[in-house]
Length: 241
Image (cartoon, rainbow, N blue to C red; front, side):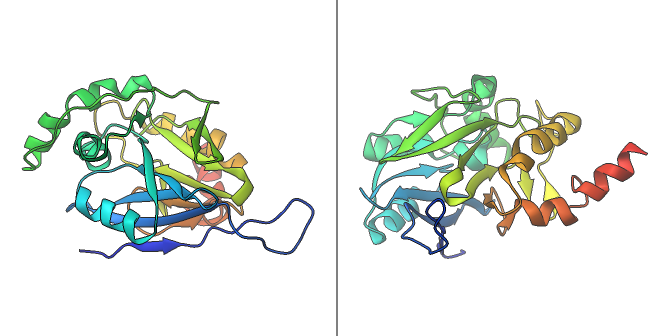
């Protein structure tokens, strides 16, 4: 099983070219046979954090939080698929924290987590509902830090992305990958909707923004605009001809 990976999140004071200590820390813990990038994101001032997309392997996530001195205060969900939300109910039982996200359009997926698990031979997955549904334009807090919520449907109807402009960093779930995009052949998926969401919501974040996808290695917005064969600038130009 892949070991957790610490992510260096850079931050620069406005108008000051010298780097400063980042207000956020992050460790990525690939979980379950899906190798889904569950992330522990925390405020370095308070050492309070969130688990984003706990798809399973809850003990590994709790061990990673402990190893980094992080107190988990909430769960954040980008969307309702099994590989991202399948362990949320178990994590709530273990540490008693609330769930925030995704948007309510993904309620049908969160309600069907047990059925999703059965289809993939994963026993013990349980439905969950968030304490707070999210919507585009809202914010979520981690310690003293706030992240912007961006609704990016297409992979699922209620998929959200979490963006931290101050550190030029985002967690994008299954919208965008290095060299690819999220699947759109599952219930509620739609390719045209996903492409529109990426262009309208992710590209404006800026080419220098680094992101963690739901699976595989991270990338930057600029790298994907330059070379992504599905939604890069050249790919979209070819499709428009």
